[in-house]
Image 1 (cartoon, rainbow, N blue to C red):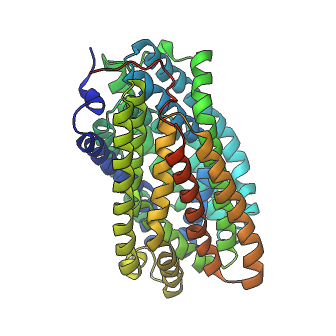
Image 2 (cartoon, rainbow, N blue to C red; image 1 turned 30 degrees about the vertical axis):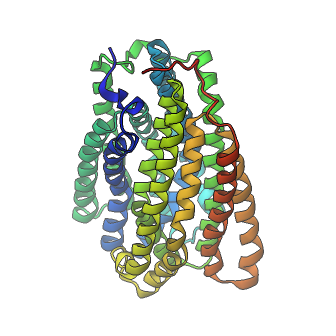
Length: 453
């Protein structure tokens, strides 16, 4: 017996994608509140040094977890394609294999990150006055690695089978818990930045418990049985085939962004605080796009599994155009209201100026960032994750790092650090558009497609 999630496979294409994307957007919105609540409360209660400490760890966190999140993208594609093909046994095998991988990853990250994170912060050129609080934040944060990884895994499994509503409910609950704990521990008791990390960990474990409880009680394809959580070699290799390029892609992007952050750190504490505030706002600004791209990946995966190739092409076009239009509208609004938005995070005029300068350079080019993510999501849903990885390797790593290596010493201007983003967005979006247009990406299903009318 299959669920109402089958709406992705029939009916109105715009309605199918939007119906999935809206709860996903709201869920991502509440998820973004985790770190934003940390930054708002930390910046306004503990000051700019504490805000710089939290902001400087963002790139490092993604560097350490991005690879495993990429593997999760592969698991989502595998699950969605088998779900579309109505292969219940393979859906179950993929779910339990992915959970086994997630548990192993959580344990590994707990050990590796708590040991290596301080040294990586040193390599990033984190200023001495920021270092103690940055280290305390990152160590506490990664002590909750198991919750962090399982949290993302459970959400990914539900979304892969087309359920974006229950992840939304659980994210609302955990976000409220996170904010309340921030207010109590940081604003109330003044415990320092490590308490903000503790609040995030606790709230994520609450989400994990809620998700696992639902999946264990489910009678659907993705039902979780604890004793069945183990590695299946065939399924794990299939997940790696799709997820490994995505994981490498995330690591590449994260490495390049760590290099960018180290260049921002060169300009001092105010630059770190201002650009950190910009990054928090950009995270919110881009939520509608990440929601649409996630919907595109699930839509493409399920429909290719079902053999609905014409439906896949129409859905991909709709998703890409929506992403481009929404991104540019948001970019224009961010450009206009940047001073007011940045000042919500810091009262220092110099820090605000750094944040506004970055917004005024990057925001009008958001359509290019949306294009890159949209085309990559279509290809990833089709199982073609190698090309997006290679594109990111060349433009978001090699070109980005080389550009900064040459220009920053010559100019000693933070403007060139900011301009590296629109430059590399342009190159990657053009490359992926050409591949999307001329490659036969619709004939790459992982399963033997069957047409379901």
